[in-house]
Length: 312
Ligand SMILES: Cc1ncc(COP(=O)(O)O)c(C=O)c1O
Image 1 (cartoon, rainbow, N blue to C red):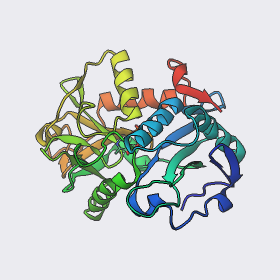
Image 2 (image 1 turned 120 degrees about the vertical axis):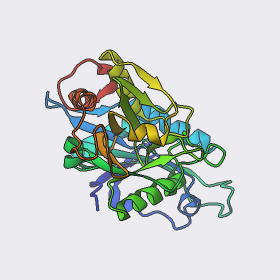
Image 3 (image 1 turned 90 degrees about the horizontal axis):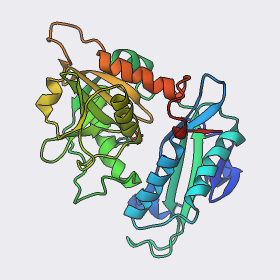
């Protein structure tokens, strides 16, 4: 279990985490899953200071998620942004994962949350690599999930909404039970969408491809970061619907996300990526170079995007 530290932020106030974590069993979100959350990382960079990566973009997406689910936090974007900084300072954390969470509290118990107050929290804890250090270095093994990714007419695919994550949890569990590290989800028509908590890229013939924003994907902030860095490095980046066999035939595949950072994929469905089945897969040059740029930015000394860094 992670340790969320002594303090958390709730609707503009720093509170004792133990007390503030006692929530009512009638919390509407507990029953029906209408809540929104974010996952943000803060890193200690080479200059010794702590910076939150793309903080504003994450908080704007939190508010977009709420909007999609037709509720509004009782605090502003600026207040939640400031709350993230306060939680890190109050807990003395130099490198951490931040979890803003908006829930609908106790009130009406039917499906329609008529008088349930939105409550906005920010928690933080220390969190190492999400898919393992070995995964970052050598790549992970993925399985195409038997669960389809959310359909746009069933769920709000652009929202990071709590209840929607049953889909991701089921896919992840299925992949792990079958001995893989991560699940890859296709949409209902068979096009590649994303990992259970990451966006996906493939490299083919020196070009980078990723499913378009109009696919049933979460518009990942790391996805946007990687597309920007790749273009700066002179790579052609195309947003295109991808099929499962394009994955199998890719020169390189990697997953990106705040938690997973930039994680190479070395196998999909037991098929080694980028080489013949008899040859051991290695992490490809494009993945390696983008991974190095990403880490240079978030925790190194790369000063090329100061607008993405908020000093704590
Ligand atoms: C389903 C899903 N896709 C993609 C991502 C990657 O998004 P980001 O890079 O903004 O963390 C996440 C993580 O939040 C996710 O949960």
